[in-house]
Amino acid sequence: MVKQLITAVAGLPGVGKTDWIRQQFTQKPTLYFSPATRVGIDQTRLAAEFPSVQFLADDQQAQLWNLLASGVTAYLELGYHLDLAQIAPILDTRDCHRVAIVPARRQAADWEEWADEIVEGSSTATDATALWVANTTGHVIDPDSLEVFWDELTQGAYGTVSRAKGIFELADGLSVYGDFVAGRKPQFDELNLPRWLEGRPQRLSGIEVWGNQLDENAIAQTFQDCCLSDAAIRHYQQQVKEMLIEEAIT
Image (cartoon, rainbow, N blue to C red; front, side):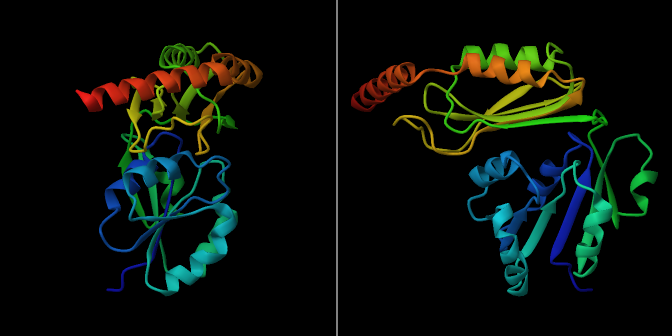
């Protein structure tokens, strides 16, 4: 049996698409591509964890077919905002295995016609009618402000949020990934990236929020209010540098 070079993965927001793909990564040449992604949050998180995997941006899509010709195994994560019917003709021209991640204990009938394989994912994934995305590259926030902002966001202060994720640059130079799915406790994980201690970070950060009746202006303004000024960033970075020097000496 010939193994398909492309695996396309689809499902509801928060159902576990990215986590399922993470489990498939091996030492073999592997590629990840998520088309029409406004902010590459999942791509950035995976790249920090799997430096041997190749990641393509939207403007590199033409390279995908050349890489596949060389025998690279590719995983395509299809966001819920995409129209799978429009993507189907493209996938049909290739030897593609389609995987639908569906909420646990929920009927999978909606996916049976599209998918070659159905995998049970998170039971808390929900349908959402609104998506708000923001590229926040260059912004820095202190941990306490981030905690307050994330609590307000996920507890309904700006509308009913069913899924939220983001990459945030902290005042101590570290980068963290925030993750929330309705029905589960929010969590933050430090990314395997070097501290950024020279001015505003020039690596990607951003937020993606799925929900209903979202007050997008309020979300954006509250986050902006939590961000640090240039002077504050320099102050914190200098403190961290001094701390790291002291730790190295002792």
